[in-house]
Image (cartoon, rainbow, N blue to C red; front, side):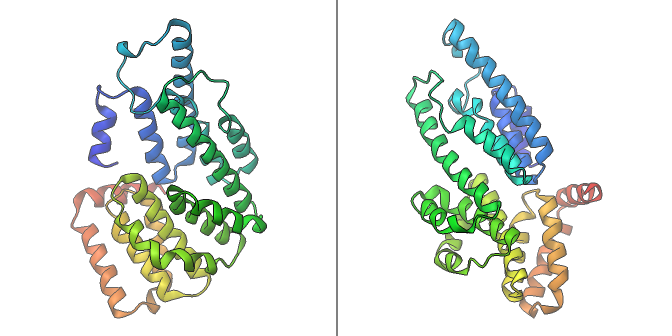
Length: 287
């Protein structure tokens, strides 16, 4: 866990729901799905208690710490649970969660920010329904999904991850889609600085490495692995870091001199950073 995350979670000045959401994001980054599910369930219970209290006694926000997001966002931690089930390959369970947040008309949402969240949840529900169908092997909706993610700029990066995950799971060739995006969009994705998009970006690199490795495009595979490692080493994503290091070792003999030097530079960076040594050695021993 990075220092700014530790400070946020330990601070008494942040709402418990915001702390729960940050914990969920950390688990998502680490692919720790069992813990992520527990946190999502806890977040839902706390948010529902607060919603019911507000409905009974009116707005009590002046008595509490401010939340970063509208209350409806935390109530529908069903979205978080659906992501967990999706990542675990439990597609029917994920669909059940989606049915809870695709239509939020039963909730009394008066504030404009909350109403905007309701609109966004409908989009998320549609996107995640597509994702589950793809991951389950429905190749026929691939083009429809590709068109969908292009209609919303925020969906392109996570959408490409989903397409690659589905391709890697189902042994699909999706070169025609990647050709539309990788040469033009990868540089843009690399420039994102917020932590959410940085996590998405390295997950995209991870899937690209797997995809090109399966195609025996080893030069590309090595480049994606090296790009992943150079960023992930500072993000405490130890499980995927270990996986990508193992992939590199598998194709090391095919690496160019330049690629070998880049890898050695990255590893030297790990070894000269005491914090990273401690976190990765301790975590790798438990993996």
